[in-house]
Length: 275
Image 1 (cartoon, rainbow, N blue to C red):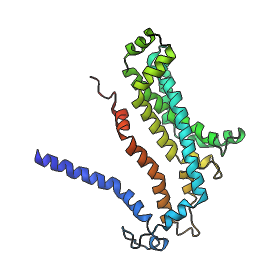
Image 2: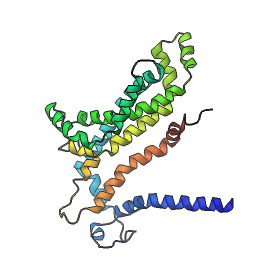
Image 3: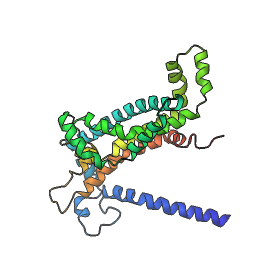
Image 4: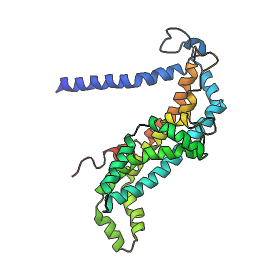
């Protein structure tokens, strides 16, 4: 037993080091000067730590505009996706109608559809509808790819909620909408929160649509904006600034996970085991 626990601990440490080493390298790179990053074989730790990269990134107007776009687009896509997915998942879980399995199958097929295959048609369509290089031009496709996953996640939660609770609320005088809003949705809060987190992460990190459906910093998000950090010399990219921007973009995700880790775990594991 002792050898087994030791082996588990060693394996855990190795996996942790393997996963965190790239993060530690990017963090170390963000504190290195441009002269040090141009060295052929730079050291892991910065020889002369500096905050110059952070000052340049936080004073870069294009990067700050992209950061603002990322927050706005991700929040709007998350809010709309969660509202629509909650209503759709409730109907799928509670109501009996013809074609319910077909709806779920189509939702799953949409989620598995490759994003690259839609770039060309979306580009032409958005140019025609004047949605190219706009916030709605990114919010709509983000919702299209996140709604299926949110519907599947929430429908599983709604199925676990006893039907009697909703009936009891209606017996006490609540309407169907009041029973749904005040009884069902609060009980499915872990699932709603999980769907919101997954949607936000997708919209925050998405690159292909963001780089293809935008042309200026007016609606370009951070992942797309980072591809324009080329520096004055194409053979010596600004590695320090790229690493610094990556750190700045990752900080909100880390904060969200640390603040809501219990709800995230509860949402991912709720309903996995039936009593």
